[in-house]
Figure 1 (spheres, rainbow, N blue to C red):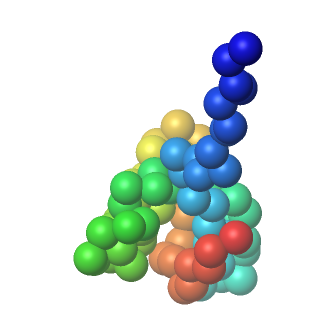
Figure 2: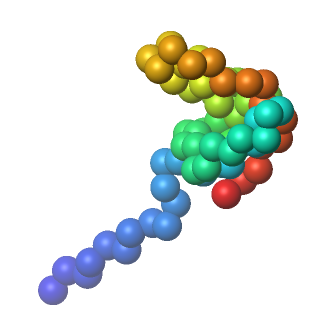
Length: 73
């Protein structure tokens, strides 16, 4: 009888909480795991979140403020 394969606990994304200069919080922002594992991970994560913010602002018409802090969730 064949064994069931175990599901890996590793997902494709890593979650981050973002705190903005105005004090607002954006929880559980998904960033691809490949960006988190690189040598310039902090810069890549910030760039990805800022790109997501630009896309959200374009769709909603409300720009986000500058990012103050990014924390892994």
